[in-house]
Length: 349
Image 1: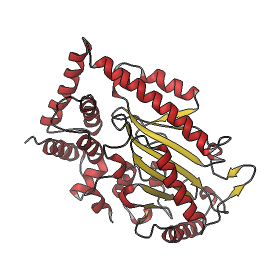
Image 2: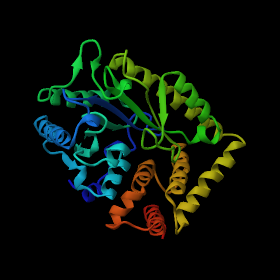
Image 3: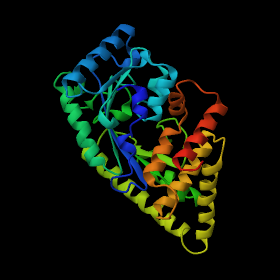
Image 4: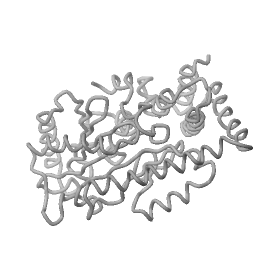
């Protein structure tokens, strides 16, 4: 499976399915693991290369022999950006490709980053609110790798990690949630503050250090130390369920009474622009797709469905378009291709 091939297949975690998928686009459970060696930041080129080769060999022996194995140094900047947009590697890993890599399983549901902040970051990604299932999948991968790798662990601290916030379980669970109604009502700021007080973190579309685009937020646990994996998952599940309930309440408020006409105008203006624009900048496109997604989630009759909007949200990102064109496009050419792709998928000439 090469990156061009990945363009032709739907990403499993972005399917319009799973519990609460109209609000929770996807669930991710990640486990940070290190070998008994200096952390990547303290390793030289030879040490990083040795860890990469060891991790790839162990993964092939742990049931991932049919996965895609990418050495980031063999990929160009567009390829690495594509993997970030696909949520398969972090922006940090993409920026330092030497002796670093990623393993991508079938339907992109299992991922292992090698030599990011930790030697290994194992992740399971599923559509909808499915924290327990994602954890079980990540745990099985962890068990398979641990039979061939000696992970750094202490009885008093748990799994040893480069960042103290991951110490202990090494678990970071997150849900990618779509909150357009809370954004429209101005309640998102208060929500983020309440989540912070509850020990959670709200991040942007691509994770740590990135901005919110298209009303998508990543909600995750702030730390993994001092609590069991089950406790971390239960806390995030409760908080995400509460966020889903608040978003649904806000959607109901915006789609009833005197507010409904204003929301209908917002959604149909977005549909009109998506259907007719000849130049469509990335963030503007994401915002209009967000409004269209909201209308569809409310059950309105529109010339699309949630599966199509999820697809366009993913495939109209900059590196996806460059790969589709098989060259690095100028900003205007990229905006033109994005507009053309959206019109074609909406069946508008």
